[in-house]
Amino acid sequence: MPLASTADKRRAFRTLHDSGCFVIPNPWNVGSAIYLQGLGFKALATTSSGHAHSLGLSDGAASKDVVLAHYRELAQSVDIPINADFENGYAHEPAEVAANVRLCIDTGVAGLSIEDFTGDESAPLYDFDVALARVKAARKAIDQYGADVVFTARTEGFIHGRNDMDETIRRLKAFADAGADCLYAPGIKTREQIETVVKAVAPKPVNLLMSFAGGFTVADIAAMGVRRISVGGTLARVAMDAFIKSARDLAEDGRFNSFAGVMSNAELNNFFNDAAAKRKAS
Image (cartoon, rainbow, N blue to C red; front, side, top):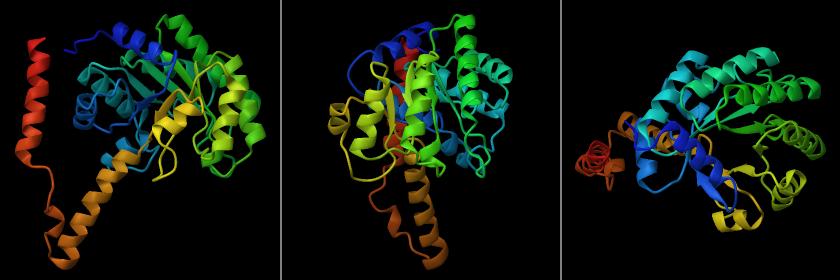
């Protein structure tokens, strides 16, 4: 069993949002979650794409029940908070979003996010009033449940071809006023965009997605006022990319060169044996 109770992890997660800046990397299975905890990260977030790809599915294709089981497994595997990327709440209507939010809380996560992506690329964002009603429904469900779960509201325009900063700010401010604890506009990348979002919703914290090489450091991002930095499915893609390149070397060239310098089986065994021993001793 985890060292920390669900209540402990929820309190710790909320405290992380009070000040400073922290990185919340995204594991896609239990092994990656335990390893990230071992590196000293204070909280973790799920990745819908990384988990789906590990199941042989496209992002968004895993069923609600499969995803909820994944959240529960991760939450029970580590002693630090887990934030759930709950996509659009697996529902369109606010009442159904609220019901699913309660199911998500049941898994033991310390936080969850709801986005305004409809699932239809031809009309990717819910109408403003609908999007706001969905956020209000999620907020009410959390409050009625009585769980101290950090609620993140996301607007998805910048990753679905709607790069309208005015509309992004309009939505984030409305979501903040509706009770979102943290605000998130994945896809913003420039210093101007980031600082505009941070200023617009202050003093509420902002999550920034960093999913590309180069650019800003953690210190740079902290100086812009961002509270939380996630990487989405990028760590999972790094792993998949290495696997695919190595497999292609075997399939196309009959070469094993990509095996050079990889972490040994013994090193991984030692890490996970030590992690298991520490949990058992506690």
